[in-house]
Image (cartoon, rainbow, N blue to C red; front, side):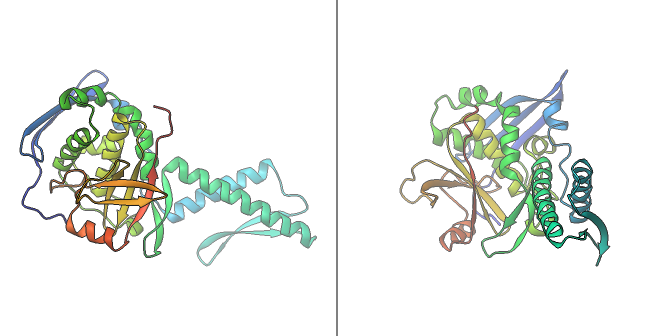
Length: 307
């Protein structure tokens, strides 16, 4: 999707096992064709335990799990004057309420509806799923990239002094462009459809580094994670267009830079995906066209004040 005369180039990548971690070593050419390098460690826990439960969303499995949880709750707190029957109907498990008093049956249905909403919300949060609506109102289930990034930040805090030492100045633009060139140089893998893949192909930040490849959603989440570790108080956003994603950072735009306004906050946009090398404020032509035409969805990634 991203075509330009300047492409990112990863010169070398190695990882070495240590006692409780792995040491990652990278070399690449940045936006100005200057050789850059970085070495850092990630714990084995971050690499192999953090999102061990993360799997592509499966509707039938999710429904069965949610219904089992509802059954458990109803056993602990039975309905008053009614009882629930779980049965198959047109290939789906449904809940029917039976009782002699129509008013109590109606009340029981409302109670079950509230329980189902709470159980579903909890299931989605624990498994990093979210309902997603595209700019043209198509709906589906995707990975909750914001919470994945938020819960990854602690594992990447050690990168802050390393990156700031390399960049040598705490300048948002210089720091962001260093991170962008690093992520853009990591090999790209094709994005599966968000609405039909339900998260297949997505790599959380640490796993992306372990496999040394990621699609645009994965690279967006990695970039947001590293930038949040570097700049804990800055507001960011994740922006989705058809078959692509990038980030926004709440810093003022300069002449000819691409930005959007969302909920009264201006976000300067950036392309983490690669292999094209784009600095902060520049997008691929296809991405800029989608922004100009309003064909995008924004998810806020604001600081929670905990860092």
